[in-house]
Amino acid sequence: MLEQVTVAGGGTLGSQIAFQSAFFGKQVIVYDISEDAIEKARQRLANLDQNYRRDMQATPAQLVETHQRIQLTTVPEQAFSHRDLIIEAVPEVPTIKINLYKQVATLRATNSILASNSSTFLPSQFADETGAPAQFANLHFANSIWQHNTAEIMGHAGTSVDTIHQLTEFAKSIQMVPIVLKKEQPGYVLNTMLTPFLENAAYLWGAGIVDAPTVDQTWMIGTGAPEGPFGIIDKVGLRTFYSIESQRKGNDPEYQPILEQLKAMIDRDALGVETGHGFYDYPDPAYERPDFLV
Image (cartoon, rainbow, N blue to C red; front, top):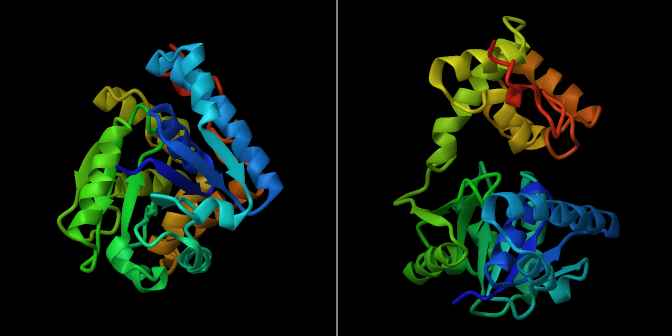
């Protein structure tokens, strides 16, 4: 069983992965590259208490124990040595991932598994850089993982059967539903369906056809969904959405104005739920108010 877990990257999703793992009994290290990043990760972890109290009926004692199981460090030797599982949750930038994988390769235990939470890249793109391709696969979590509890597991041609099995059992042990792909697919299952939906919403907004709330109102009234695409983008985070769209649509001239507008939001720190401002203001977004659909 994978009990000693490191999460490399303490951003929005990395912090959630760490918290969920610790909540269900794993010993967790959160690694990031600077004390400033560590402090931000510490705050994200603290902020998750309210979600687990509300949605998971967590007791004060459970939350104290969860935090006791989490260490934070900027020291690679502490983060990557003697660990059963290392989950990479760094930005979707190939050079950042490759540099991390090479660093891990020099420190990891021979039997440890390395998994990437990448939303967009395939494990075969980086397998050779890890130094242990048979023990490398993608393990993808959705945002708000304590509620949207899928764990998509995607190996490459060289991933061992045992690695997939161990990742599947790990997912179950932290109360995730493992979704094992039979072959590589950009976007896995969830994002293969979700990304075109969000992309089309961004086009309607960015091309000036309608504003973001109107898109969400239309979707919520038409389908009965509790939120629209821009509420989802705020939860995913503007940086993540922009990174995905830059890769998918970076060479599409028609989509450049949309990318420019997304980048402008990022530059003014309107990153979504993470910063309290995005397409909506948080913690009381307009789409949750009773009069939003009137």
